[in-house]
Amino acid sequence: MSHTASRPGTGPATQNEITAEIETIEADAAARVAAGGSPELQPRRDYAPYRSSLLRYPTHELVRVDPEEVERVSPAFGHTDVNVLESDLTIQHAGEPIGERMTVSGRVLDGEGRAVRHQLIEVWQANAGGRYVHKRDQHPAPLDPNFTGVGRAITGSMGEYSFTTIKPGPYPWKNHMNAWRPAHIHFSLFGTAFTQRLITQMYFPGDPLFALDPIYQSIADADARARLVGQYDHSLSVPEFSLGYRWDIVLTGPKSTWMESEEDHD
Amino acid sequence: MTDFVEVAAAVPTPAPQKPALQTPSQTVGPFYGYALPYDGGPQLVPGYHPRAIRFHGTITDGDGEPILDALLEIWQADESGTLSRELSSIDRDGFTFTGFGRCATTIGGHYTFTTLKPGAAGAAAPYILVTLFARGITHHLFTRAYFAEDAALHQTDAVLGALPAERRDTLICVSEGIVGGAESYRFDIRVQGENETVFLDFDA
Image (cartoon, rainbow over all chains, first blue to last red; front, side, top):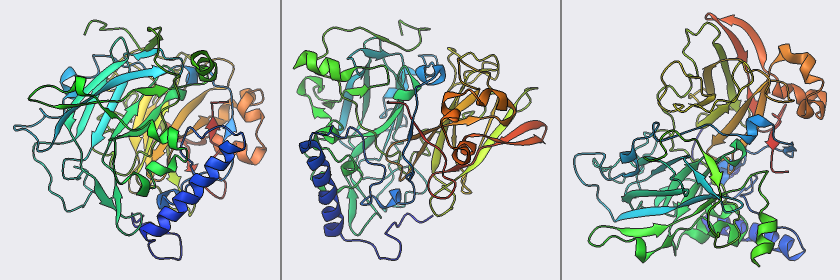
């Protein structure tokens, strides 16, 4: 399979063509909300501006089912699975990685605002030049011998987590001509039920590439995709050492009642 | 390191600041390969376990082409139908059955787990919960792999019973008999198109 994805029978699209497709879908989503529909909390699976999705979404509606016990519980992870040092991505090699050192901290909560404690978080990211260690990443930016870009942690008793790393760079990809991904960190999370399983990406505030990126924009609702943007938090910056970003993660599930709690707080 | 052996649980905490809305999914992308797979991830039990089964298949896209950059996770009960609360899914000890496994597909789009055949947990017929991530899949897909020899239980299973016969078969493993010393079950996943696999939504 080629990573150069375009609509069958056509050449690579221009950014303007992709942006026009993105805007059309966003307008459709906004019109549905204006007509009384619920905002879309998740990305669309059938999202043509992201060309790799064209052959990878089911054409049938998903079948709605009540979760059984298998889906209502989640694998157990704990501190014996993950060394506490694995949350620091800057100490995995002999020297310091190049880049803007930062910490990303936050809490993992369920739909009712309760802490998801003692659960596994995995992260991976490009280096400061926008290059992944992955062998299929052939972007001609330098690898950093002092940075792999992989970390793990177990959430604390309040659902808290913290990673020390460097800010990843944006990088080009082949979705369309002159396509660039906004800087991001991949996150993988487990909740208390397997239905809460989540893999996502955390972004950085004010990125000029947001409007152009069909992966970020695959979440057609502007408020929903803004939930993926971490916030700079000066209280988390460490003097003479690192800049602090805060990003809380919410894993709702079939047992959660977020609509009720929303009313409670309105 | 205070709560050394406690397992995951949601506990009440003081006053959440705002209504908690779901953090949206994003694709796993193509470059997870050096991050998420881990040694022993596909081996829930060692291959020499006397009741090890081979659980494998090929994942294909809407053109019938293999998806070579997919990541699968399985989660299942043990042989007695119990969901494990044991740690060590990541750092396996070779003896503890945790019920969780993770496997990246090969360049042929193929995955292979070594596991145990699950017992029934609750009212449903026994199955393995399968979660699929891949570049191009914006939000992971859930499906279930049932076993043909449990056909009697399938009659009363809430999910299988609600599906038309031709779609229902996409959720049932093909029994291949003994292959390489173990019972082998094939569960191919067709993400899109002809004979498309049934995918499940638990957020109803």
